[in-house]
Every structure is written in structure tokens, then in C-alpha cells.
Length: 135
Image (cartoon, rainbow, N blue to C red):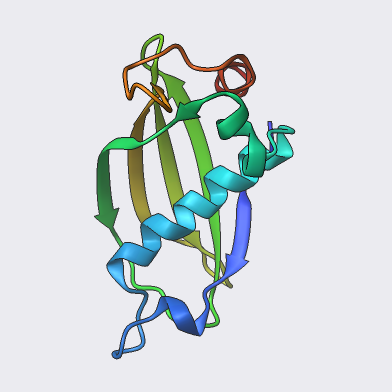
């Protein structure tokens, strides 16, 4: 299992008022998801095509608990839960780093494995199932 994902909030993440735009929180969470998969040896560029699998988000939730601004550091902690043969949930805790850490948000996405051609449900591919089990 990989550790938390950390990064600096970029100017491109913020809105005209100088705070992170709400949709960018989920984009940062998705970066943490990709980072975790890469750390597990899942090569994103080819993996899903080779597996003939799509993993669309079927549900998302967000709780925005503290504003973030450009230049601040954040840590995203990711946990994962297998829901079924073809579905899983990712839970994210986003923490603003600094002299005093502050929980910035709680986010959740649910994903469903579907066949690339038929768009029908399919079992989660083996490497991804192993990643999900390695909590």
C-alpha cells in the first residue's frame, strides 16, 4: 500500500476569489487515486485498454470543511473498499498542512468495472482487485 499523496495547491486550482474551486478538490483526490495505482505497479496508460475495462464513477460525495488557497500544502489519505464483484468505493481525507493541520474535506467516489466494448458490468480485473485488497 502506498502512503498518503501530498502536493502544493496550484494557482490553476483556485477561482477568481483565490480559493480552490470546488471541482478541483475531487480532481486532487483523483490524482491521489492515480498515484496509489501507480505505486502498486498498475501502469495507467495501457492497463485499462489491455484489460478492456472502464471504471466510471457512479456516485460521488463531498464535504468541504476548510478553504484552501494557492501555495498551501495538502495531504490526501486514501482508503478503499470493495463493494461487490464489480464495484468499489474510495474514501479520501484531505488535510491542509502547516503549523496546524486542518481537515479540509472528506470525499467519496464509487466506481463500477464495465466492459470497454459492451459497457456491461464485469468483474474487477485481478491487479485492481489485489490493489483493493491491500488496505
